[in-house]
Length: 245
Image 1 (cartoon, rainbow, N blue to C red):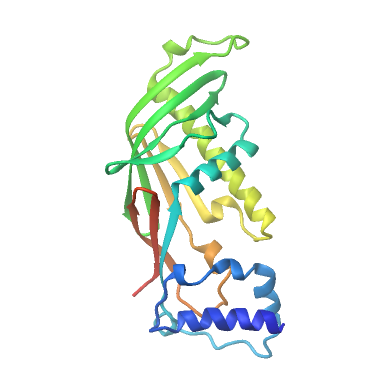
Image 2 (cartoon, one colour):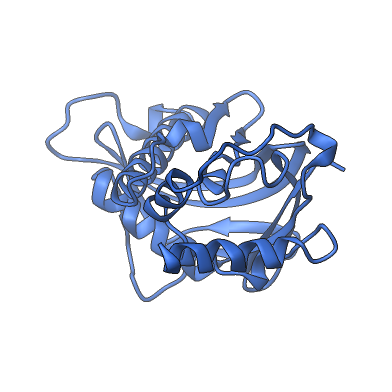
């Protein structure tokens, strides 16, 4: 219990710096759900319920390196067998000016083997809403010899992208579910992010939830967290998450 208390005090000290804190200054991995539940169970009386404007504020800049994204794709291939990385020594996601590029992956779209090179424009649609528009697509498609279906050339790029996105979305969900289960977090993938591909707009929409972060913060300490910013760098992406002002 002493160890748990010290962890919570350390987090509280960071959060109390002017009412705001940067996540990069505190390692949330120091805490786990078991710690939080044990610590909360030791409280003798419930804390008074505070109004939203009485809670501490938090600003977090979360940097996600492209190498980490590649590792996540590799984890996706373990749960979604229709997705593979072609060359494990080469990048999968990288920056190209104001765009993101995805390549070096192979997708089995119902017997059609697709090797896509995608140029993507990610942008924030609104609070907690991220969109990724396909600006340009290059698809190399070939038919598995064992599959009897319409020739790959007869299927449009739009139809192929629907199938590619279906594999990607299911891969994200299955990998995230496996990670949440391994961390003993009482959440499902769609509690954290909801994905929907709009084929007419060639755009993937993502509704982000901060529920996973809330698992590591004692209830009633800070306000509700939201995704409020997104930016690219040469080495990765940055997400800004903060409480309401």
